Image (tube, rainbow, N blue to C red; front, side, top):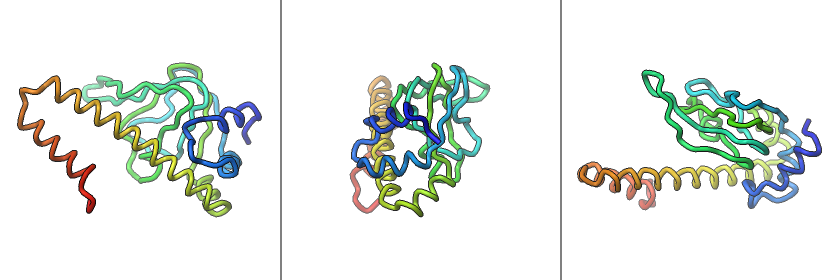
Length: 177
């Protein structure tokens, strides 16, 4: 069950642009509300993920831990946004963690709720999938900018730049991939 205040935030969130009101309401009916204090781990690297999290208030940091335990910040998230998409839709655990950097308010969609949504309102589930693809596309664009900036800073590594350019061309430009 989701409180009225949480529902209002969720329904107004621009992260679900393109999802019509009826589909948002159907999705809202299967979400679980959760609060997390600053410092809480919302998603743990290397552990199975069973939910998509809609961050409706607060902030979080996406980071990965590299041997020997060094943390690398990948991105800072501010509400409203969502995370956990890549590890929710495939069985591989995430290669990153998410930590609340402020007291946070979340709405979670677990696998059982997703299956229920697919049975009850397939159109809403489809619109959620399209919204998820949009968010992932934004993440890929951010990754592309980050890698390109890194390559610009390290232009003396010409063979690596060429390798990256070839990879990008194959990934984003070839229609048969």
